[in-house]
Image (cartoon, rainbow over all chains, first blue to last red; front, side, top):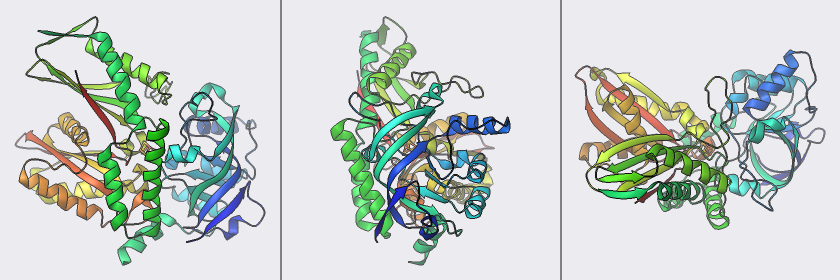
Length: 184
Length: 280
Ligand code: SF4
């Protein structure tokens, strides 16, 4: 199985070529946000205010890293369960967010919003945080610093391994995976 | 009456917290290696190989294997002939957790109030279960329990007439329902019997047992093997990407229960099945 190298933010026309089950190595910028940051972003939008980051065209990585040890840019940083962000995600996709990196099922509403907005949901391997951290080259807190591990960070990654779970055509690796095994 | 100092417990607990998060047990690593040999899906084998590599990096570089360094859960067997000098056992454990999570650069994942949700900043309080045993030793067993797998765990009060079939269905359904969210391959802890709260405790306690080590009663040991086979036919596979390795092991603890009850609890653990123990 081949592995595609992909630049972030996505270049025009790339998302449409990504299919559920594709293995990718991502290089470029992602923003981190998990439960508390999502809730705060959502409340900000509900109050008619603007977000502290522009999500248009960007990718959000659902992660709350461990503290960086001396001399390192970040601690261990693997994905958290995405489903807890489902309530907030369609709103961000409507604002132009193009991708999410996490682990686990998305709701039907999120899957429909991914199709509608031509976006993509990518899976990183939960629990492989020590390995994933090696691909993170720089980290900067850009908003909600008071949230600690849950703050919004801007990260530069190089060859960060993911797999496409939900593509913009509505294919779902979690469903395909089960079918695959039941047949063999 | 043997005396054990408060500070010795603090230091030992701190060490357990750090080592549990850095060094995945050999039992789990071996289970990964066995699984790679028989996993039918290519992506599945790829995931398992990444997990082996991840465990090696974490152990050799002394960093946490997962960013969710968990709730610190303890089962402590307190010999009835010991006396703890200089403070209480609970305080010593919590101080040890605080120290270990700080010095080990582990993540603080506890909020003080379930609805207001403010981080306590030091990963305390720990969850501590105490069992009194004969003798003059203190056995401290610790697990760093991640949120992803804990969230997919379930408990149900079945009717005695549901019988063994009802029990099996509930366990398999819980695993199926968890799908990718609990970070498979899983280690599945099951409690059968007891009452509402004791059953859940048994399921947690089962997770402390080594992977591959069977339960003593032969009918329960056979049930563990049968359920493991069934789980691995669900097709969920490593990380839910499809495959034949959905679980690494199933461990069941049983207890006596009321004539009207058949409680079953399924406590899922992810592949980051982290536990360490020490005897003082
Ligand atoms: S479920 Fe386990 S492996 Fe997955 S992110 Fe949580 S602690 Fe880590």
